Amino acid sequence: MRRHGLGMCRVAVTTFVAVLTLGWGGMRPAVWAAEEGSTTALTIYSSAQPGAIPPELYTGGMPFRGQVPGYAMVRHERSMDLPNGRSQVRFTDVAAQIDPTTVSFVSLSDPQTRVLEQNYQFDLVSGDKLMERYLDRQITVDQITGDKVQTFTGTLLSTSGGVILRGEDGQVQVVQNYANVRFPELPGGLITRPTLVWEVATAQPGPHRTRVTYQTSAMTWWADYNLIFAEGADANSGLLDVGAWVSIINQSGASYPDARLKLIAGDVHRAPQPQPKMMRARMAPEEMSQMVDAAGFEEKAFFEYHLYTLGRPTTLPDNSTKQIELFPVARQVPCEKVLVYYGLDQGFRGFLPSLITDRNLGAQGNKKVDIYLRFKNEEQIGMGMPLPAGRIRVSKLDPADDSLEFIGEDAIDHTPRNEEVLIKLGSAFDVVCERTQLDFQIDTRRSWMEETIEIKIRNHKTEPVKIIAKENLYRWVNWEIQQPTHKFEKADARTIHFPVTVAPDGEVVIRYKVRYTW
Image 1 (cartoon, rainbow, N blue to C red):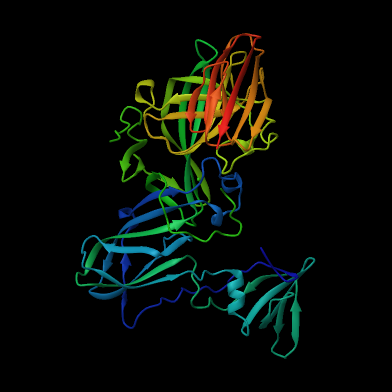
Image 2 (cartoon, rainbow, N blue to C red):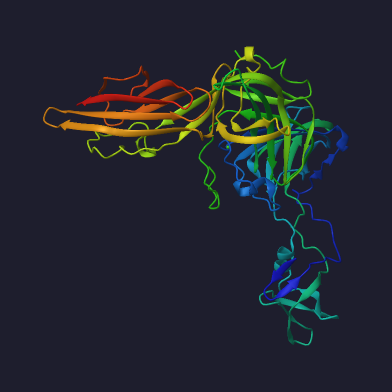
């Protein structure tokens, strides 16, 4: 139902005529063959950051076509009859979000068949369009007043503030609360679906097997990983059951029944596209013969990316979200629980571009200890397949009632085989840390400064815990650690790690002095 000014309108066309075919001179229209010979294939690319797709894109009823961060290549193969010489081909099974500049029409039966011209027609019929086309023309409307219905016929002058009609007697009538607008015919040039029109030239009349390929926006996919964690032999180890699903959003304006589906994982570069105003989103390998069922996804290297091909047809309706299993659950995958204390404030984590001589900057830190699960994506532990970027959700079984309870989630980037996967779950409850600046000295004439740091780690659990105290040496690039109380590891040019084990209800105190020179 559409509001025109103060009136309410339900447009009903009482006389409907076929859309006029646009042609060139005496060209004859081509005829599509029966649909049972047609096939559809999709390759979907995602530009979404892992876990960054807002829920309203796939849980709401309204389409958010301009905000879906991805696109797809669509391929239709159809049989059709072409007459000799030039003919016109009309193709209506295209997505509303098609990029017309990417369209390709090829005859597989006769490669010499050529497309001379292409038109993309998208002036779709609607109530507003019909009203616009009938300005200064005669229409009939019904006005509803309570239970009474009055009928008015006249020349349409305006739809602002209701329907304004001029009758045969010259009187002007404003009709509000109107419904059931009746037109004598459907104006030419309006179509019900987006349509591609080709001028085709061929010297081989008769049946042709054709392929139509184009790119459409408003389609995307991402991976969702569901992990179940179980405690291992000690507090610092565990086992994971790893399952993976593919989620696909289709808001392209077309449905794809029984389509062959492929997904591309990797960062495929495209020419810069202007962003819609509403868009604020931040989406020799071997085959997985032992991990993927014949009807599931098969993975293979494809150029510098990875291609996942579904081994069975699937249907993707318009305005829908579909989930498909990416690979069967990998069970009993060994993992390590890692506790990390990163005591610096967020602004001082990493590399700063200049010398920091203010003693108070970075002196105060947080007390939270981060929890991570870490495992290696290798075949000998039950994994070993390239993992597309996606969101990882981790649950743990509560033995009291055999229920799965959520314990954290994170997002991963595209992860090749034999690389490490690190999942941040949250903050530890029973492990508390404090970072304190004990001393600071600086001599600008001799170009040095020294800072003494103390880190206290207290474990209130009933079992020992391993923890890594991570320190950024952010004040300058030239540094030297002096008088450390514990062994440390150099992670990179300006980061060190202190791995320690803290006894139950125990405390560990780490101290070190760092000398900067410039």
